[in-house]
Image (cartoon, rainbow, N blue to C red):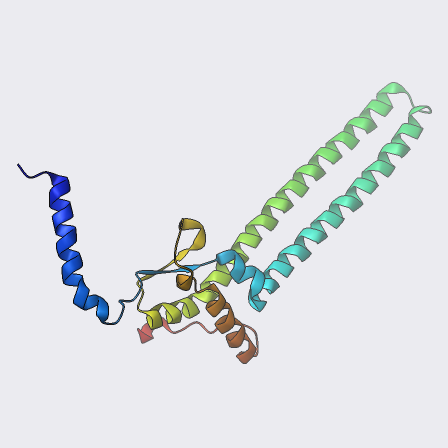
Length: 190
C-alpha cells in the first residue's frame, strides 16, 4: 500500500524535475504585494495632512476640556464660599444643579470625543480610497493579484513591500494636482 507521504514526496520530486526548465525562464509575478498602511499615513504628504487634521481636532477638544475644567473649578470654589452664607436646602439645590451640569458636560465631551474618533476613521478611509488608484497601478504593473496589509502577513520577501513606491507616486500625484486631491479614475473606463 502506498502511503500518502510517499505519494506527496514523489509528486514533489516530479514537480521539481518539471520545474527545472521553467525556472530558467522569467520568474512568475508575485501572487501578492504588501503595503504598510500606517507608513502611508506617516510618510506621505497627504497622510501627514490627515494626521495633522486629527491632531488639530484632538488638541481643540483637549483645550475645550481644560477650559471647562477651569470653569467648573471656579464655580465649585464660588459655591463652596457661598455655603457659609446659605441655608442647607438652598445650598443643596445649587450643589445638585452644579453636579448635573458637570455630569451633562462630561457626557457631552465624551460624545464629542467619540465623534472625533469617528471623523478620524472616516478621514483615514477616504485617504485609503484616494490611494487605491495608485495601488491598482502598481498591482497591474507587477502582475500580482492582490495587495495585503503588512499586519496580515507574518513573513514575506521585502521586495514585495510596495509602500515606498506608493508613497513616492502619491506625493508626485499630489504635487501635480492643484487642489491636492488624488484624481479618481472614471469607473466606466474599465
